[in-house]
Figure 1: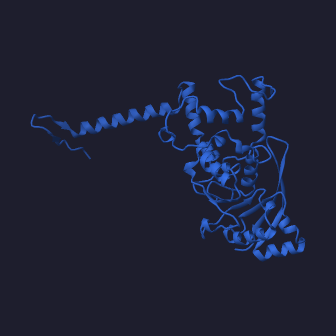
Figure 2: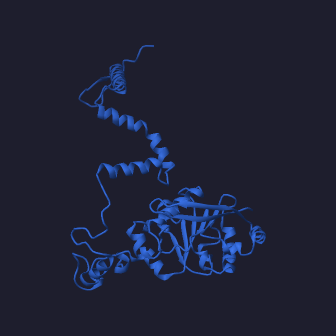
Figure 3: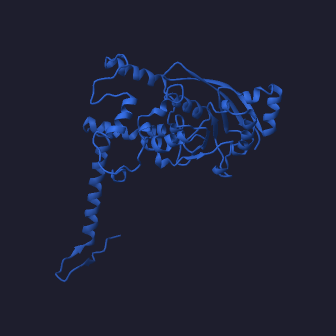
Length: 332
């Protein structure tokens, strides 16, 4: 069918556009664009650009890595860091103060803060010094990191074992009984979604360390963890409907009367996800073993809990291992 030869004059000056001519121009432009794109897809372009394209095409693999982010270091990771140390010719020297701007021990740092404040600081009242969240000097020099009888780095070991053993994801919910100054909790807070980490802690100094130093200094305020001051296994402030994927107590039940531990377990059962949720207790389970094996099992069964076994986990950085006892909720 022949195209119409109707013309259109958009102005009074007589500019005339022929519709067949316009259609033909569009078709020619489309054909040229097609051949241009085809030549680019079989690119003989610079290697850097080709590399960029290849990296973009591997985006699915990167997305997969993001979705399944590893928690523990692999053998390849360990070998890599050893190679970096060797490649740089590094050797551990005696642990003495190094030369620097002002090398100080923690005690000296604290004295300096008290006496001189910061190297550059505002004079005048504290209320006018532009510090949004003033922190006590004892916390700034991290004296509380020495409160555990073992290196602060051990907190990462605990996190890795518990997170992997419980098959956690960022959407999981975790309750720690006795989080102290967040030696372990910091790693859970960073990994989990906002408001997904809860803790019951009785010690005021530990809580001040957590709120006034650890959370702000680690950039974790936006995670809004629910950390509650309380004791006697009172979990009412966490709400009646919350259900946890993991509940754990690290070196806490050791210092509690067995009767109180059982009260706590009874209150926690309904807050643990059935079957898949886990309770982990560290060091020992004397609260149970003191009753005798048969009575212990009977007591756990009456609460709807099942003992799954004993585990050990080695530290990444120092000669140490943790002992953990695992339980699950056996009834819906």
